[in-house]
Image (cartoon, rainbow, N blue to C red; front, side, top):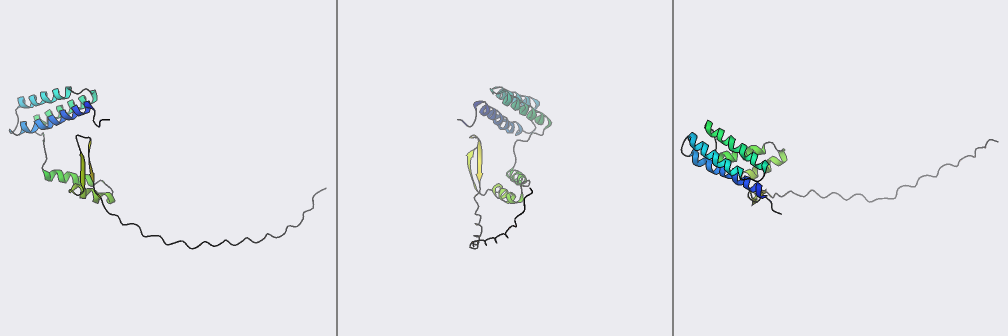
Length: 161
C-alpha cells in the first residue's frame, strides 16, 4: 500500500512549486504586479491538476494567500538557520518538563533521523540510558497464620411447644 496517494502527491508538488517559485520572484526586489499575477496563475494551474477536490481547494486557498501576501510585500519565502533553530526550540516549550529537555536536545541536532518528507514522514530518534530501578528487598518468609481458637460451646435453647 503506498504511503502517499497520487492526488495527495500532486497537491504536495503544487505547494512545492508555490514555494519554489516565490524566491525567484522576490529575489528581484519588490516584484511587479504582473510577476505576482503570473506566479499566481502558475500556482493555480498546478492546484487544478489535483484530482482530489479537498486538496485542490486547500492548494487554491494557499496560492491565493501567497498572492495576497506578495501584493502587500510581506511574502516570506524562507527563514535563516538561526530562525529555524529558534522556532524548533519554541515548540519544545509547551511540553511537560520531562519531555522538554529531550525535545531541546533533538532540536539542537542530537539523535538520528530516518525517512523523508516525500515518503510520508521524517522520524527523529534520541536514545537515552535510564538507570534500572534498585532491586526490591526480598519479602520476609511467610509463616503459617495462627489457628483460630475454638469457639465456646453453645448452650441448648429449648424449643417452644
